[in-house]
Amino acid sequence: MIHNFNAGPSILPDQVLQEAAQAVLNFNDTGLSILEIGHRTPLFEAVLDEARSLVRELMSLGSQYEILFLHGGGTTQFMQVPMNLLDEAGTAAYIDTGVWSSKAISYAKLFGRVKVLASSQDANYTYIPKNFSVDPPVTYLHITTNNTIYGTEWHRIPDGKGVPLVADMSSDIMSRVTDFSKFDLIYAGAQKNMGAAGVTLVVLKKSLLGKVQRKIPGILDYQKHIEAGSMLNTPPVFAIYVTLLTLRWLKAQGGVAAMDKANTEKAGLLYDALDRLPVFKPTVVKEDRSRMNACFVMKDPALEQAFAERCKQEGMYGVKGHRSVGGFRISLYNALPLSSVKDIVALMEDFAKTHG
Image (tube, rainbow, N blue to C red; front, side, top):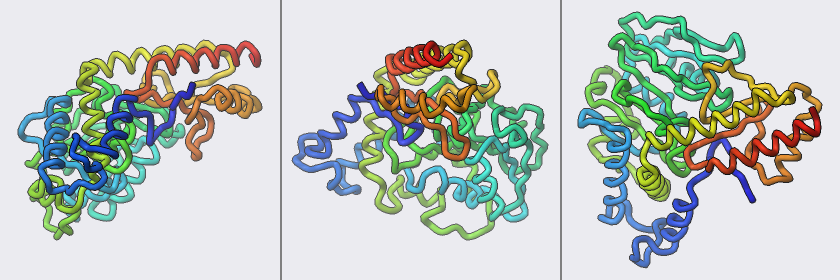
């Protein structure tokens, strides 16, 4: 049996894979493939409308929010957010919790001033900074809610003191109960909890826009995308369709609350094993551990190759840590079944008996 612990693109529900595969051959009994339908036809407009509606429902968003499906991944949002929100004379506040937030900071500096309120770089990003304050006037506060490379997660959303809150939720969106109304702009690549690679969800309050003085190229202007209904240019049709299927599946499972319960159980089982088995060492402080990405090393580095080989032999894919930090990483996204976690924990227990 294969177990998919990849950090992204990551596991999708079997039902979604089957429905997507069928749509490639015959979409909604039209005789056409989802890969070849026109994006401005009623066929695809219905897909986009339902996807928007499900995002709004699952995140309990009011009419003050717009929902966009865009190209470019989270990396484009590192640029698009400050381009649309930050004037050259303005200041944006960022919290540095890893590679992706650091990249977001570097992009924002191209458009205005950036104040890094706090950073966990001093400990190789193994914790979430807590002792900082947001002092207006700043244009917005940016956080990365989950850090896939290092395995940290914000479990308490910071108080922006009235400053608009912007979040990169690429790796934990809809994985836990969250008051999404606390955020003014959210962006997330779909390829971890919401669908296939190729589309980025952007949720934003309309009141944020129209305040910068610079000219913005149309393709990077949120307002233009809103006016065009996410069809300013040809949208990533197939990726949006897979997102729709995933959102339907998520709703059928019981929504975000059900994902929260399941993910808490999976993470609890895995971290319990990492803490009690003497050959493993989690790398993140307990209070900031991610429920999406559990990162760890071997207490004896000489055992790393043996553990990696054992995982490979037993069909455990994606357990290698990010190339920048090494070690191991087990990703526990929404679609990962509890049975996969039980199986890798059993493997870890046996490995510890053999090598402890």
